[in-house]
Length: 446
Figure (tube, one colour):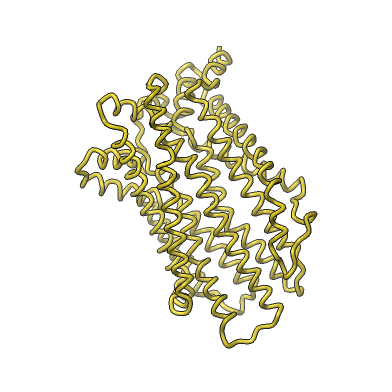
């Protein structure tokens, strides 16, 4: 009986096919970008140096800085169309399936979709990886045979992306396991505790302290390790503080709502501040990375164009640092650009019952689209400003130096943040036709 019910619930209908295709496409994109970043880091790891290990440090730093953005976006991809999956699993619970059985089914389903996407991403990696032969490393361009990752490395990365999806699915099942009726009736509203804000303040203060006590006596390896630890820790805690700040701002907006679209937008964000953060988390992480990256580029430009005479090998190493910084920023924004449209499409599909109900009440589609843009604008403000401010506090000396010595790079940082905001808004606009298709087929939503 359970197997028969499972076959009925798992088979996607015509209206639910996107619940399968969206996570697969998202993981394919994330996988391809991850493989390319890993291939570039491997080239730096294999580069010859003077025995100091500076290129190994660059490789580790690049991987460490990109772990959190890739992991965060992978988690978001695993939670696409989560509402529909929770509904189906809640039905299984009501039919008598045990919590262990339901949890295992959800983890397997999410893992298979992620694995399919990660494997599909290998095709994009195979097409794009030859372009790495154009990137000079240690003064030389790598050969085509050197840019390919070993098969075992690709296998490990595929397994890692699959594990991210499995963990995300297991964590997201708590409401279904506890109360299937609460999920079905949408009565289990998420609550975000102020402890999130406290944890963020503690981590940021610890990061500032660590950066202050770091000295030349630690050596290049020690200094690099301290910077990497601080970056990873603060980027990870952004995912705790971000939803709390978004929920607080949405309540503030709700109290001052004067139009129907303002009210719908604020209520939509308050329905799940964590989901609203997933819409814009890529922008938040990219904004955080852009500030120290722009400051480093400004510092390098000041050193290279200053009165200090640099040796040829120092100029080459500075160029390689610039390559790593630009690659980190480019990969961050590439992940944002590739996932924002998918995330916005998933948002429309998850809330299609609401949009169909509003349509039957007589609300024009243009008002719904405006409410969608307003719902994204508030979280987007938090994601663009808060991480950038945190990065400025964390790297205050370098940022201050860049402001006075290389203002052009500060302008570049602002332009990068503006680009992230524009990408998210374009993602909302690009999904307007999807909303029209949802309204044209209301029977699939209700």
